[in-house]
Image 1 (spheres, one colour):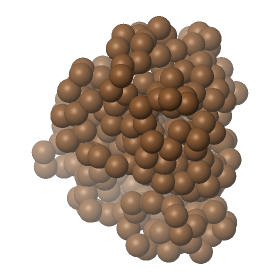
Image 2: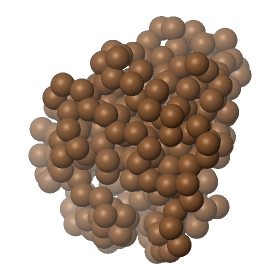
Image 3: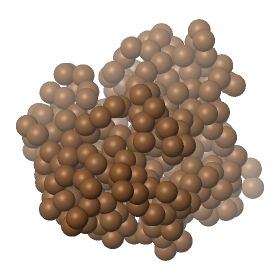
Length: 346
């Protein structure tokens, strides 16, 4: 059947939100709903075929990867990490093994494993063995007690994925063999969605960077957001069950409520922000969270998003039935942009 028409006024709101984003310096804006693309705008340097660096927005692919692996009985999110990582068992090569024995795989995707995130980050991560760096990282805090932003948790999860699929541990803490996580994701998810990453960085050993290595067009990232909004379905094909996919954003992070499994959440922070949390956000936003508030007060709490450096953001608004990608610009407060889409702000 043809897609339903957008609700009255939604296309107009999408156009106004897109123009606001351009005025704030965005390079690319794509807003879509079940009816298709509602607004698409590009600023200087942008374009429909330009591959955009997602930076840490790449983390948003990790939870679906985990769920697909769980569906194929490779691993489970509640598994103890040591079930798949002998590097963290007694006698392993890394430090703080007693603390690491309490880490579960969901701690890695929620960044509550306690890892210090020592070593290189950002682009330099691609010049080292990122799995070995992650697995040899020290534990700054016990699992579930603090939020520690960084790539090492995600690379440790990929190491566990490859070990679960038949990889072997090296004496230096790294991993040999096992299924390639990106190839797995492409065959099970990106390919069926018709999405093609224009680039995806790999480290010195050819291991994919899920902490910040993906690049794709704004249109394709929005198409991924539509898959999330539709509860794991593309067209008539079901890739993930909606109740499974909901775990990514329903997860109650014991250390930092505004973060789920690979996604930022519009959930009230309450009293969850603590002195040991390492949250690399502008001071005004951190103050809002420290006061117990949420990222965008003008939209419902069910909104969630991926966020990368360079103001690369993918917003999913279930209550409004809208997906929005905005990339570039200097703004770090999206409340008005999102409020226009939701019809709660002018």
